[in-house]
Image 1 (cartoon, rainbow, N blue to C red):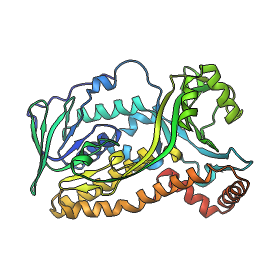
Image 2 (cartoon, rainbow, N blue to C red):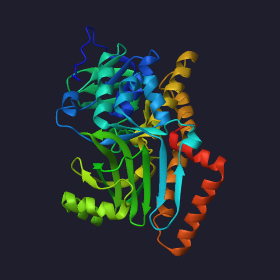
Image 3 (cartoon, helix red, strand yellow):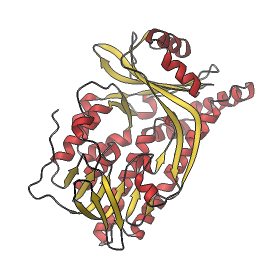
Length: 405
């Protein structure tokens, strides 16, 4: 898909909302709001042509059922559906014990629990939609020189000399959020003392659209079903280990790495081969103690960067988008100030439970399956069996995983 520069005959300088960061969360927010008639300026320091340059990238994103619905509202799911692989079942494996737990078609009535898409495909569709939308001005590549909020608006100066203004700045500029820093919003942080090794793999047995979450003492290992790669069965790997062990995994040859993975994971998917280079990144939690300031609101990783153990980080950001778009739509109908404290405070209050419960769940899973002790193995076994044997509890877990509230 060719990337077109967004050229307007009469470029805007005043908007309803400005969005800082054109990653998946920021871009989807722009589309959802623009579809409701808001004028949107979206700012990013990266050139879309550079982000989408040739050189294939097999890295993936796990989208919950709820996130798929949000992308449908944004107008791009119709183009992504054929490029995605559905998750029809999730198998949870306690690598330190004999207990398995299957979430599957019985609980979902055959509906997909989620979808795996290539990051590159998602970014391509989002950028194309941004450039085509009449209510969106894509401002990239450009840096922000200054941000000045006041009682009536926020003004932003760009490195290309443009001066913009809006009722509200939506900051989706990631874990190291500049907006969060400039508004002096403190954070709560936690270092899990683990690194994630990620890669895409081919394997000799079909995955049958099953996602595997294997909890080992050293850290969780997840394999998520992908579309075939060059005619071979494929899955996406996220493997959490201590920093030292993660680096050791990075230093292995491809054959040695796949051999160790085989030993840890077993023969569920047959023999593995790497389809791309491995990558590694540290795992930590960073949560803003407040998600809004004067004329500014944080969404996505700028508000809450969580552990990937449940694969819910991006999905949590998409739920931010959905709630924020509803809040702003109500404010517009009532004639309220989009960037006023009343609107932002109500939005923040509505997000508290979802974010707090997801952080608590990822913390609990990380701790529960990270202890290799006979008593803890027994507790895990009892807990998993209870979930398996109590249908309403199992359905609740499935709905949470699907992002269906």
